[in-house]
Image 1 (spheres, rainbow, N blue to C red):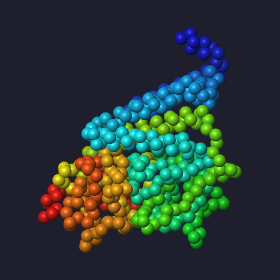
Image 2: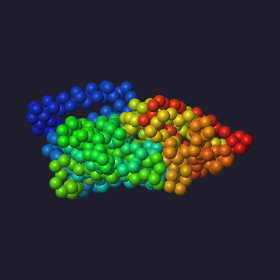
Image 3: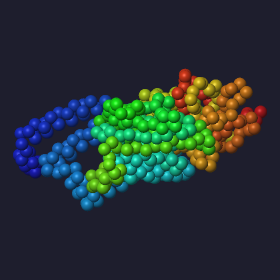
Image 4: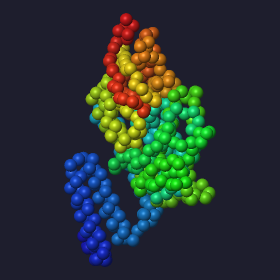
Length: 432
């Protein structure tokens, strides 16, 4: 207590006034936060951050000097490891499967999140020299990643201006978004700007440029809006047939960047990379474990998922998502049937419980508008099963040995929404 009184005595009236205002703000935040568990957690973290910032100010410390001390003492690495250790509890979230196969995939999933985080927050984290890279791919998966998609992301900041240049080529669908936040942290990942491929002005060869910033630029025909909180841009490239289409050529540059070389890494940047990576692993794993539990409440059905919720998690506003859970016995199949609506593209896929797409490199776990086979009346009929359920089924999705998991049906730029019907049947019923 004497140490605290000594610190207070050394402060100026202006500093004490600011501290008082900060305490009032913290109290108001705590009052507002008490109405939800999420609010309490977010409010508590914000209180912790504010107090730490104030104490650093009193001690005359800077963010860089604090980071240097954390690295030299081992505190930063210990915090990183402790958060990763805590993330393991997501695999025991209520409702999560506890058998060996699902737990093995769950542990692999956590390591994949680590890889995704390090690629995003450490290796490609310089907003002064951004790099478009594939954060998700065939072996790094999350949040029902679409096997028909190539997902690109780049680190940007709202105070800078950028230009994305590219050539459309023959990819079926492409969209660009600007986001703020990170999965599982604070308010999540929000889309703050969006532009879709059909809206782009291109030359005769399909070349285009997009100005990325908070305001339009008279020098560019295309604009992706950002704001002060913007932390990244993303690109979705969607293939109708991967073996028949050429993906878009893309590049991003910061306006004013003269050499394109990244900045040297600093202690502050390293600490932030470790915190963001471990925060992604812990936050995303708990967020999606909770979501899988919620989806299991309407297992073997495909209702429309609230678009507003998914848009707060980086969803594409052009897509209607029918997100759910499936559960089958070894001798059962889930029949999904629908008369397709008029749309640019549709896709249906199955995942494991952790919302990772199943192994699409070696098994048929998804289909789409351009690959599926249709019934004579134009309707779509898909069977989800552990084995080919019978010769009458033209579209079989292989569960890869799983008896349960999550699933997602997407309508992209659809004229209307339509719920696919689902029913569980025995293999013998299909054969007959």
